Length: 290
Image (cartoon, rainbow, N blue to C red; front, side, top):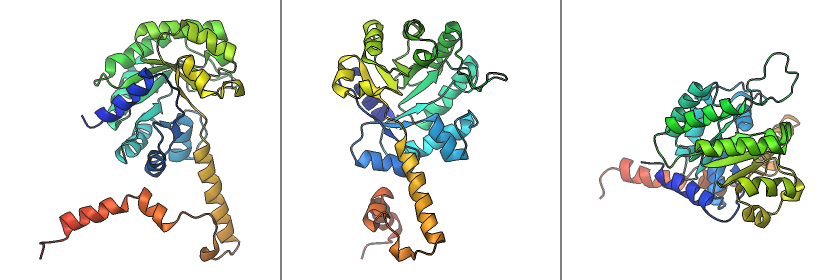
């Protein structure tokens, strides 16, 4: 299977002893840059997908097929293992099964399924609401049943720590682990005490997002079962700022030759894998050797 190596590398991260920070990627070029810089893992978030594909905020407006298509473009561009945020699975437990089918065939190494009620219900007023634990367990079991490659990692995600507190986060973690997920993703862990409580009960790898400053210590995280800790999605924001500044300068009359902070020709050749295409062109388009 084409994606075996990437999935095995992701499994090695989960089964290891260290915590890594993944690169937040959003398209083939950003994934190649991450790989060239030595990142062990790429992360494609739902919020970034909404911005990249739709130019829309993170309000569950993107469809499964749009999300899977962008994940496929990222995966086919190189060999970086990719963890994706599959949100709530785009519906109920049966929709989760379809989500796993589509995203697995896109080539990802791991995907998260969360227990947030999405899209936001009428009258919710912006408040984050969680499904019942039973519904969450049903989604996790559906995701596990739908995968065809056992190397694909299914990660159970919950925002309970930020929404309903430690005890609910522990209860959901226990239930999703019992359902058979490969790792648990906790959003909104802010303190070492909270992580210590979670780690004391979790017997499977932990993924963290939205951590507090108290947890910017990979050694401590690794000692407490955390194998992946997200740092946010600054690369996309930096790209937006760079595009805006370049367009602004052009609009205001700056000659193209005087623009600052452009990628060099060498860097563009590297991220486009120009040398590979030149070699393929010589091999397959060059005609008979003389």
